[in-house]
Image 1 (cartoon, rainbow, N blue to C red):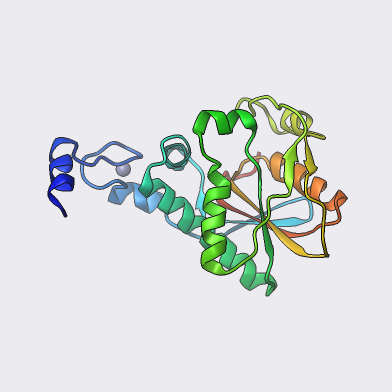
Image 2 (cartoon, protein in one colour):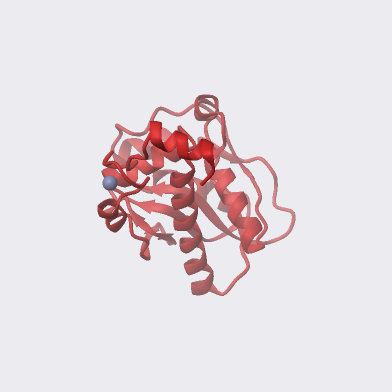
Length: 212
Ligand SMILES: [Zn+2]
């Protein structure tokens, strides 16, 4: 530990990102709840691989990574996403192209970073996998957080399109931070399949169970 880090920790001792208890950035109790496991759900016929069950603690981690760029939160998200990806690759035995779900322009303005794409690019280079951003938004969509599954599907219907056409046939994995109702991934799968892409699986860090 260097002097400036030591001084900073003395003035601002680390608190758990989830429950604010003094000590580590993720305390022992919270890390048990945030343990990486293998979860498998699906959107239509497409299997979805996830690693951490989404709840209030995972919600705080996601927010700390997304909105504040907290390094420990980013690291946990990366670990979780990498685990989901490796499980999916082992299941299908393929070398997929990764396609991250795009941010809305509003979210990008608010956060100043393309969060999912950044983490996905980092993992893609570590795992030596191709990554392409081929999905774009056609129009604004409402904030989804207060909408039920049916309204989310309506809100997203026709909202995405393929912005870079398929060059040659390839097998793809969709990448997102979280699956809650599956509406976003479902719309992305539909969009990609219309564009001729073969979506083998989707991979997320978090999963809200049961899917609403
Ligand atoms: Zn805690």
